[in-house]
Amino acid sequence: MAFGHGKVILLGEHSVVHGRPALACAIGRGVRADARLANEDRLEISPWNVSVVPDPDAAEPLSRAFAVALAEYGTSRPPVIVEAEVGIPGGSGLGCSAALGVAVLAALDERFGRNRSPVARGEASLAWERVFHGNPSGVDNTMAAVGGVALYRKGAPLEAVQVARPFTLVIGDSGEPASTKSMVESVARQLRHAPEKVGRIFDAIAALVQNGRLALEAGDLAGFGKLMDLNDALLSSLMLSTERLESMCRAAREAGAHGAKLTGGGGGGCMIALVEPSTADRVLSAVAGEGRDAFVVEAGA
Ligand code: PMV
Image (cartoon, rainbow, N blue to C red):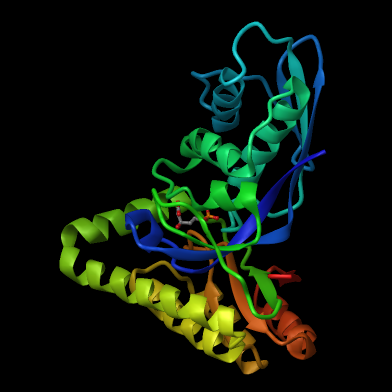
């Protein structure tokens, strides 16, 4: 069974689109997929009840993305049905479209006997991700394929980060629908209108990312939490947060989290809080009380 990881961006979303580094971590949840020979090409996605055929000109992005994925395997292959099972909320900042793209490619690779490294598969799935996100940095598809905790910078090799101790995250879903594409466009507009001011914000986030890497390598989770809070404030200054996301972050901090921030595209979607295992339950109920759903993941093991 092929798998694409969901991910959270620990620090550095949005500035990563503009060449700054980001720290990201794969989560155990993601998308599973399997490909079997059939009479026609089809992509079936549960539990969404979605079934599409590949069509490069379709209005439905999944049809276009599936056509892009299949194009890699040439025209002399037999038709396939790919069955995918999505285990993370879509459109919420957890890299669902990238996890789906990587799982679909991995399933097709398995079926057609193509051997390639996770890094190469991540690169190949950027074309899928472009169908959904317009101008993706590449962090989502890379993390979906490679997993682990890593520092990502556009155009540079992925740097694995050796964390000194595993850490626990509470992920809270605000339930507010979010469009990464329109959030990325909004930040690009702000950058055009005020290049110096927005450039300085990106540089400040880049400094948080470099310090965050050191904190994770040293096992300084309290220090890392403070960097998350600062990153959240900078993202809010770019109008990427919402009242609900901020009340979820506040509730997490008050319940004892080391730090909290929105994660991914923003404008809704998910937030994350860094916690000690002993405070996970308390933070989980505080976050769930302000949002729609929350769950706990272990990372960096
Ligand atoms: O919302 P998600 O899970 O697709 O995360 C997007 C991360 C951004 O930095 C906002 C965009 C990107 O392409 O890196």
